[in-house]
Image (cartoon, rainbow, N blue to C red; front, top):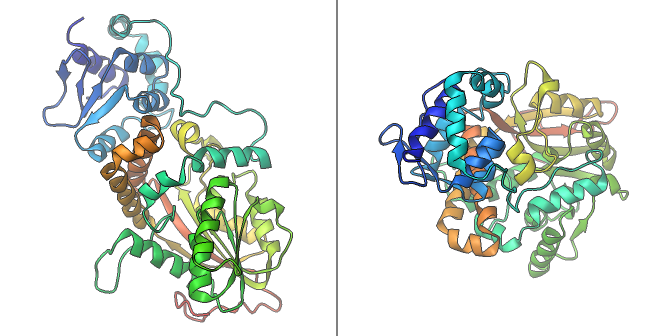
Amino acid sequence: MADAAGRLTKLAEEVLGAPLPVRIRAWDHSESGPPGAPTLVFRNRRALRRLLFKPGELGLARAWVAGDIDIDGDLYAALDLLAGLIWERGPDAPGHPRATALRALARPGVRTAVRDLLALAGAPVPPAPPAEELRRRRGPLHTLLRDKQAISHHYDVGNDFYELVLGPSMVYSCAYWGSADGTLGTLEDAQRDKLDLICRKLGLTEGQRLLDVGCGWGSMVLHAAREYDVRAVGITLSEEQATYARKRIAEAGLGDRIEIRVQDYREIHDEPFDAISSIGMAEHVGRAQYAEYAGALYALLRPGGRLLNHQIGRRPLPDEEAYRVDEFIDRYVFPDGELAPVGRTVAQLEEAGFEVRDVEAIREHYALTLRAWVANLEERWGRAVRLTSPGRARVWRLYMAASALSFERNRIGVNQVLAVRTPEPGTSGMPLRPRVWAG
């Protein structure tokens, strides 16, 4: 049973139909693969069983979260090399594990290698998924209860953990980097500038009423009330976020101008609002519910009111019905989350009655933001593990690093869509020159 790494490399290359771009180190201390490349470490035989019983992304994710595999070397470089073999191949693409596994197993050489690896793997039963994995849900998507459970899975993992990752701004969405002198500035500077950009796009003025949908830990409503003297309502489905936001608001002495509610956007009945911000929330809505979401926000605005919808988007597919959420994201990160192309988002906002006035793509900004979050996590790794679990910390490290690469490679983007509930006879109240965000 010597040279497990060599045998693993041989099987991977047989199935993928391409040379393995990373090095492999196995539990028997054997190594194989290109010298100097990032090393994929198989810490035990259980890692192999996870991949044999669930080939592809989910098997790799389970092994990573459980600590059965690791990366020795630059995580971004390793993910960049592996992305072309796994994450960026559709299920019908040549070389994709799900597309080629059966054909590969029909080849005598691969059948022999698999028997060899099954012997290497030991017990002929699949390991249980890590405790951090959300089991498959049943029933219709995006009911009020199911959405609340999905949000709780992602956000109710401890405010102290999010403080560690996000830093003092406590903003969990794409920052807005850069300054007049050409420097990037700090993460806190970039998040403050993003919040202020949204306030200016919304044209906020003293005494207006703002609704922040998916308010997180309260950063947007705090900034808007403090800097623009508005009255604000923030809604979230996370009890932990609401508790944290209320404490921040009380400490800032703004309790008379800001209200935080644990409430779904479908449950609001105290309109109208002068402006609505939705920052990194619409990804949770789902395509089946998006028309209802857009219509609900339209109905909550006064005539002439503005909506700023800040949302991650994906590249369009030749067959949109073939879109599926990544299994790792669905099981470990954002249950039931769905991404849509920006064109569909704009169309659905317009179908709800909005006049879309501006779309700003800030894809590169999210890659910078994610890399800053990963750096925060890695710098405080021991504390992150103590606050949650080793598996949960590993989920966030993989998710954020892989997402940074996805933004950098233009697999996904993020867009700020500014829309107006334009009244008759058609006066929008917008400035004549685009991107001059005066009230």
